[in-house]
Image 1: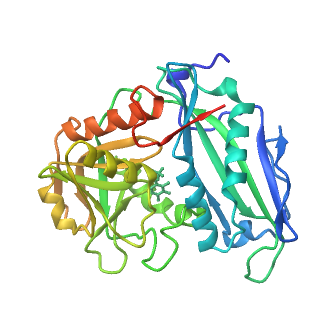
Image 2 (image 1 turned 120 degrees about the vertical axis):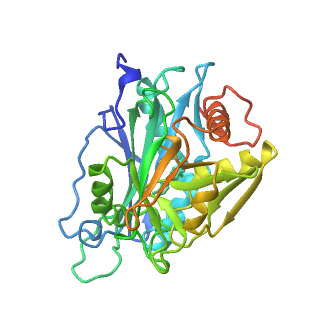
Length: 336
Ligand SMILES: *Cc1c(COP(=O)(O)O)cnc(C)c1O
């Protein structure tokens, strides 16, 4: 493959194959290989009308040794089961999840970006209600599929801090709603606020808890963390999506001798952090240099360069993902 790996966008590029399995009559069928980019589903499918769909996102990296590594796919499988449970989709067994992601990667091996390019192969599992219903109820048929697409390095000009808009004008998810599941509806609900942030020159929105508007929830499609007094602090909330990157950073912080806390974080605490950032699969860490409160106009600033701890955690996690550092936590699987 001769793609301009270093300049790939974080977007969709066609690959050769995807894999699909159908849930019908109460059971999953065999995994099928497809070379079509299109789905043929019923126009009354519950995913289209009632948002009965969940997805996942993870990355595969080529190491110096030429091997392809996947980061903590078991956690993605578990989270997709949890999302399925949350919106009454048929659960995908871990064995089927693994078979599907491995097969989708192997079949498109030539699209896995080379070691050192900063690019990776993004893996997108998708689970949708595919059967027809007009009344609001769960589908009796489901489609589970996985496609892959090569994506470029998130930070093309290097690891650079961004601005965030703290808003009270929008909520992404309600405390007892679906915020903790990786479902499309949460993303639809975030588009207007994200547009407002982008129009104002911000990378994304920092949401507060929907009920009291007191505590920090998360940053658009990424979790939030702050660092002070040798402690990694990340919000505990029922309406945020449990990020696997965040879970890993908590562990890494402890492994380098820091304390790690998951607890409610009042927004006033923003004043006290030395470093803050957003974390998720796409960027690992996006350091934040400025947060602007759109109600009061108050600004919180953290310096124009990434902080030393964010940088250290970012480098360490990336090195584990690509195989440059030993996999001391057992997070990496070789795709063979
Ligand atoms: C996927 C996602 C994240 C990041 O999770 P990772 O597992 O780290 O990629 C954070 N917040 C939301 C809302 C998400 O959908």
